[in-house]
Length: 124
Length: 124
Image 1 (cartoon, each protein chain N blue to C red):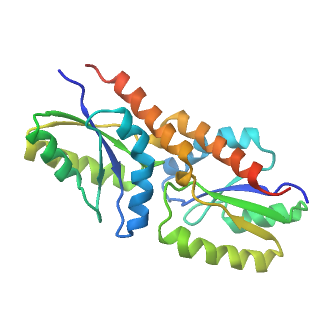
Image 2 (image 1 turned 120 degrees about the horizontal axis):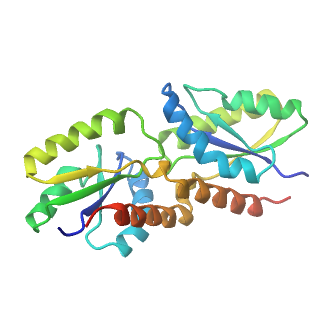
């Protein structure tokens, strides 16, 4: 079995600037991991359906969705798992849904580092 | 002038588990920075008003709000700035609103690290 294709899942927004922030956030991951993609749950393209369709057309069968969410609310507990089930049926693919990035302790450390930088920039 | 008091601002949710994830995310910052607090924009306590009231009662006059949001949408572009203006008037405090954490490149690097860990844990 080959490595799963990584899909970074963002909520999505009709505000182009919102999506651009996520594209910038995803850049280091997309540079480090072959075939990784960003997908949006709603309100922006590409959707999960688009990204999985394209992956399947290229021969991929296993995907891992990593939610770019700080915590799991209704979307990650209900909406996304339901969408994943539909997508697996529609595309004959295996799709693993990882925990949201905010549940990883690395995020808490990054937040502390951001705050420390912010404090250094504040005139005392 | 003393250092501003740091307020980590999360959206808030009626789901206790959602708030607990943010409390865990905030822990490294709260351990590193004196008087830093978490506050919620809505749906959970403590609110920004509660945290700023308590800070002012303790003698603080300057606060920096750091949004624990990955990107700026309507809340951070409109709702929160309006709330900050009201809070400054109500409490006679100076409140700086920092960019959301997701606009700092450190977050993109942390996301890449989380994804690499996730890939290592996936059976190949």
